[in-house]
Structure formats: C-alpha cells, structure tokens
Length: 196
Image (tube, rainbow, N blue to C red; front, side, top):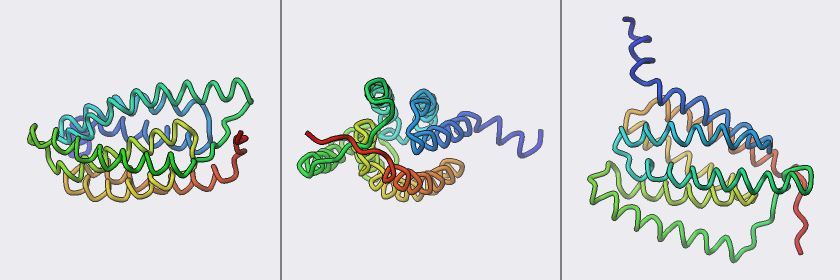
C-alpha cells in the first residue's frame, strides 16, 4: 500500500468532512438552501474526527451544530418561502452584546467540562467552540456579523489543528477564512430584511 493510499484510508472521515464543510460554507456564501444538508453531513463527520482527536469541546460543538443546522435550514426555508430569497437581517447592538457575553460564559462552562474529561487544550478549544456557537447562531439568523466572527475563530482554529496534527483540517480552516471573507463580501450585496 502506498503512503498516499494509506493516508487516504486512515483519514477518510476527516477528508470527507473537509470536502463537505468547504462545499457547505461556499453554498452558504451564495445564500442557497442547499448549504444546510451539506453542512449537516459535515457536522456529523467532524463529530467523529474531533472525538477521535480528543478535542471534546469541538466534538460537543458538532452536536450543537447539528441543532443549529436544522434550525438554520428551517429559518432560511421559511424566509425563501415568504420572500423568494434569503435576506440578510440586521444585528441589534444589544443582541450582539448578549451573544458575546454568552460566548464568554460558554467558554468557562465548556472548559470546566473538557478539563474533567482530560481534553486536549481545554480553554482554547472551549473558547473557539463557544464562539463558533455564537457565529452559527448569527448565521442561522442571517446576520452578516457571523462572517466577521468566523474569520477570527477560523484563524485561531488553524493554529489549534496544526498543533494537534490535523493538517487537512488546518488547511480546510485556512480555506474557510477565505470563504468567510467571500461570504462577507457576498452578504454585503444581499438584500436586507426590513426592520420594523
């Protein structure tokens, strides 16, 4: 068996997650409903990858991602059905502050849990997982701020995954930074929801 074949066999779940994540995020930048079933597949694949790597906060994060993915799919579908397109929604300042406070609180809760299970990098992993939940919530709610937060979180994830020797995932997250920038550009051009 060649080195490449051995690698593909040993890391097929991570590679499948890599492909579905990239495709799902690209579809999200395009504001198409097809992003959600693709992202759902990626959530499940990376749940397995992170559990095997003992990145327990990231594994738990994938469970929350499944819930947010189903919610986002429903919320976007409802908007498309009513308006014919996915419209970007404004993010009120108070909602932003509450979400950031929840991200900070979530960091400490997840880190305490992760430490009890001897997780690798419990504080960094917990912080990134917690703020990924904030970004996912904003994405499901169609707030453009999700892309700014994803840029920051994904840059930090690159370092974590290099440290844990998850090279395909580190490369994926470098690509996700680029896709988040593309999403930010595309969503700025998107129709805005009416504020009432």
